[in-house]
Image 1 (cartoon, helix red, strand yellow):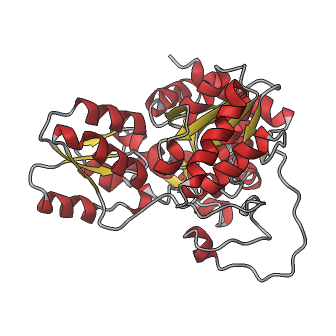
Image 2 (image 1 turned 180 degrees about the horizontal axis):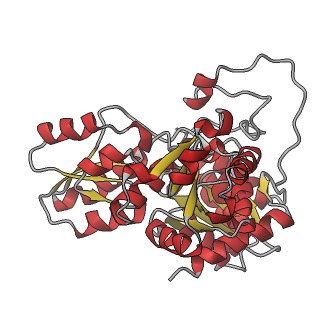
Length: 394
């Protein structure tokens, strides 16, 4: 992957907590945080006009993708909206677009680069828009995990299944070791396929999606699952525990969906009698078990579209999407609330704001390519192999 070259700066590292909250920037670890040039604040209405003008000037040369979790001020400029895999496929279906501007996070832009042609250039308006879940599994950590599985004598029995929310390096590892990628919509099919190939699955990097799919959909027990912690020797597991397990879950999670708790579910049921609780499968197992409905982002949207007027819903997913759905269906008398009392945006997704989008579009309109996301050819080849296995799932 090619990104801007780091500069040596005499600064003190920003506390990690502030970085995760999106309140500060660390110049030594983040790229693309600042927009060169004189841009007004995000609230300035002139930004909207500038974005429209730059996009109009680019015409068919640019295709803007907007993930469901993006803020409204950005999503209004998206040519298509959707989840990460849908957007990557939409980009591949537009070969005439020279520039793919991905309003999402880093792993999504990588996937778009993998699936699009060499002539297309993928741009991420802010290179600091990452994904905490994807960052919880590095190539070095996963290679070490495979060594642990080899030493336990089970590597040949293990099929890796990696969630779409993973880096290109992890997708490539998966492809190289005979595994497949999955989304939250097809995780059951992916696991069924994997268990036809081998006796065990290494599920990366979201433990909750892996556990929920194995237990809810495949009928396994919680005892069939173990959690591999990359920060502990041998993953914190004995060879006997690894040999006994069917699902080896990576110790990763979504910082947004992981916030929802059983208390959240119980509280909303007390506050809103008759409420339907609908959550994403990245939530903890006890939350999923207590919910009325569980499904992917696309499932959540379709469920609310089909819901009867006057129905009440508490949604356990990212707040930008929940607010957008609440506004969309308010006229149909559907009451839609956020499952938790605490405001919970995806802080990294929200780094794609209107100033960064304006800067990216205006730069492209002036003939300057900025913030290109480019996956190296070897990584791309193995990652694409894993993605193709997913596309071929029965």
